[in-house]
Length: 111
Length: 111
Image (cartoon, rainbow over all chains, first blue to last red; front, side):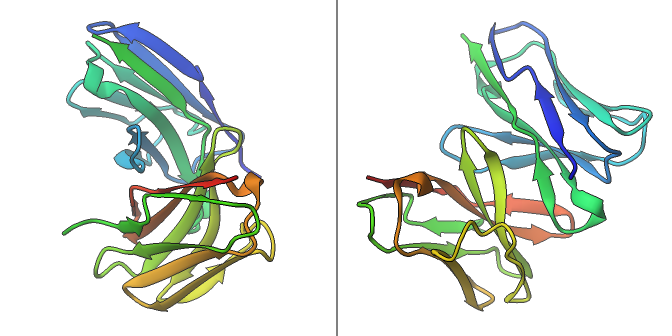
């Protein structure tokens, strides 16, 4: 069974700081997705990456996919309180419908 | 579109009582998922429907849990009898291509 490990588990930073969170898989990703879940809400898809070495940018968020497609990182530049939430990576297990989630990184950005 | 709608948003019940959670997927989405989220276990897939038919219920914890999808616009997740260890946030999600759209969740507390 594929396992997704995310680090760090918790991160508390000051507004304006940069940060990076990581997602590592025990096997090659089929199609890696990053979600953000705000308190009291469901996860919302941020990005899907498929190709090894791929880099995608979404405003202040930069997503990198490892060449071997077993790891990924999410970098946030100049974090804002609105970035607070739980960041989850996920993969479609065996390219099926079943989405496997990592345990998440809980980010708090203090004003 | 209103997105995925779940009700109730919060449910507090006593051990042994029957609990019914409701979900209205996004119109036109033909796949529906029920998840459970806890601090200890993260997001877990309980059951998956495609075109109203249950395809995979291997994540349903035990016989106390049941789910139905009588039509394309409505699904229920029932727990009978409920136990304190069922306390969690339950999410419903519907799918368009490879993106899952989550509802806001139902926070269930079983006393």
